[in-house]
Amino acid sequence: MKPLSELILNSERWLMKRTLSYAITLNYAKFTSTLEEAWRTSIAGLSQSLVDAFEQSEAIPEINIDEDFTRDSLASFGILEAQRHRSRGVTLIMFLGLMKYYRQSYIDLIMEADFAAFYREHSRLFTERFFDRVELGFVSEWIGTSMEARLGELQEKNRLMTNEKNKYLTIFESLSNPVILLNEDHKIDNLNYAAAELFFGQKSPGAAYYGENLIEETLPWLSKSLSAFIESGSGEARFETDIDTEKGWKYFEIKLMRMLDVSEKFKGITVIFNDISERRQIEIEREKNIAELEVKNHELELFSYSISHDLRGPLLTIKELTETLAARHREILTEEERNYPDDINRAVDHMGRFIDDLLNYARLGRKSVSLRPLPLSFVIAQVMDVLSSRMQEAGATIIMADDLPDISGDQTLLLQIFSNLFDNALTYRPEQRSPEIAITWQQDNQQAIICVADNGIGIPQEQQEHIFEMFYRLHSEDEYPGTGIGLAIVKKAVEMQDGRVWIESGVNRGSKFYLSFMLAGR
Image (cartoon, rainbow, N blue to C red; front, side, top):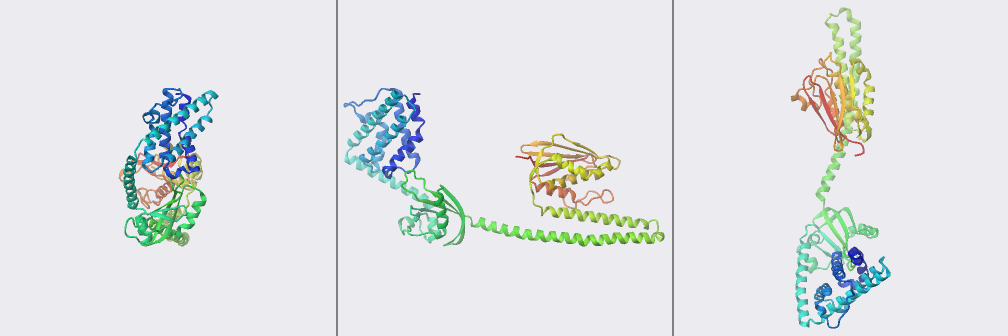
């Protein structure tokens, strides 16, 4: 492709902006389109005609007095544009004047191009002669059309424009969302039926357009936001507010948009209303319920602490009295009766553990979650340090993958999760079997799936769906100590970090607990 052709085809937007700038500055924009695409199309058509002519021959397209310019292929696009503008009532002088500034934009582009002097001058002269032929073409066609034919054109175009206006007015009136158009002075220029009915009580579609003039009406509830929007210079803005309408108080999301008029004839603002009263009412109810729930949770926490304190005192008294009675009267007790104090103390200790676990579960509901990157190996090391005495006593073996990832989690919650899982692995095992705990992982998209596997007694398939429920126990206290709350704490703590937990297990085949967490930095 030749340099001039490439320059023109690659400069469509520049040419459009330059031509539009000339049109606005010299007041030609008052009879042109308001939308950017119309300007782009006209530039694209002219550019293609010019490029086609230049690609066919670089010879300057001189003007021969005997030519019929109405049949000139170079002028065909200009003739078509002239006919379109003429049918809209644009005069030959107005159209010819604007074409001078289309021409000037192309000349400006060439003169600013990085061309050699000879090639620049040749390109300029070729473009000048191209526009001369275009202008001669539509002038010849224009003056060769009779007044009667022009009148017929205007009448036909007027009918089409009237139908088009009615079409878009009907669409505007049919919109379910209220829409108000503000003029340059920010007074109401027009509004659709939904807005007229809602804000002014009008009962007939089109009443605002054909009937009562609302241009003097103001919108006091909009003034502050409108002023801020105008001062900001932005293209659009959104805000929410409640308004007293003809149908009662409504809550709206309101969108302000500057009109898309590149010709700058219409500098108004479009106001679009979205009735979100129902959503707002739901939000209010939700906020009310959350506030009430927070109060209830606080009351429940105070109740839990109160119960804990009130229960611990009697438990301690029971334990002390039992030990005292046993010491004072051991000589008169039968062998069977001498075991009663130990049974009572075991029950008291169990109740103490139950209270501790219940309080731990209750505290989870009040804890604020703070997610941050944490090395999983660091969390496991802390758990092992806390449980080191029990692990040593049980002869436990810990197998941990070398490449455990960094996960996004809450340190306190993670410690509770893995402490409970490790505690279960140490507790629920055959007496003669040394516990083994293996921690591995695999990646699933942006998540780490952590597996904590043990070699314990396992869980029957039919009971696995219940083991994360509060107070659910598979064994009696005599068989294995516990409160039935540990795995409920694990499930709740995992879900508080937007994860999930599940299990694979079988009787005497150990258990594998799977936990999903987001990988750090994802």
